[in-house]
Image (cartoon, rainbow, N blue to C red; front, side):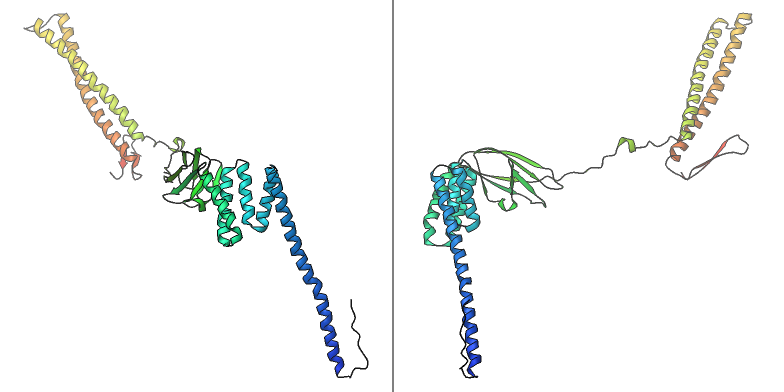
Length: 335
């Protein structure tokens, strides 16, 4: 560190001014290495990127494109140079990754145009020439949706499509492509589309709303219990029906005996054989009459009981009590 001499012969008033000048000189001295260090770092960084670019170009021209591509990509991330982007496109093209090369050439052309510097004019023209060539070898697909739902997910083949890409051409290899789209609350969409080299197609998609229908499990459906009155009415009506049938059978037999006796004994029958037929005919007639009365009563009672049971299943106001004497039932309710 340099020292500045201080003379003792200086006037007392000049000594503070001399000290101030010495301090300024010291600060100026120490500040010079800082600026030099900054300039050296910038020069070193520039020299490093230049060496990296030169090495990447050397590898590319030597045919070692797989090793050159990571270096060019590193330069793009560090410098955002259109020239590095151009060589990224060249490398991807040589590796057969044409859609990615198309994207790199597009970025190089747009970046060079945005900078507006004459030194990048050749870069822009080279990138545009490569794009014209690739457009003849690749296909383009534009995806659009009638309605764009929330949380929309779109994929072409195995590649995710950003929402910002919708409505703009997506560069693809020519051939058959599978498009998938999904969103909450909508039926997923799946489409296959074939695009030839140099071709361009637009696919407009629309989601169909999912119909949610309540499904009742059979295990949760409990059948309504049958009213005891309905059962009693069916049984009573069945017995009454049997009585009516018995009336018909007995009545026909009684009529048959009566008709036969009338033809055989025009003037009356007094022999024991015919008297037995007369007695049996009267018994059958009595049985028929009784069966008819009882059967009709039971049928009517069964119908009434069945109706009361039918109504009791639909109202909770129906009350059924056994009469104190045990000879009947009492039904109360709203009908």
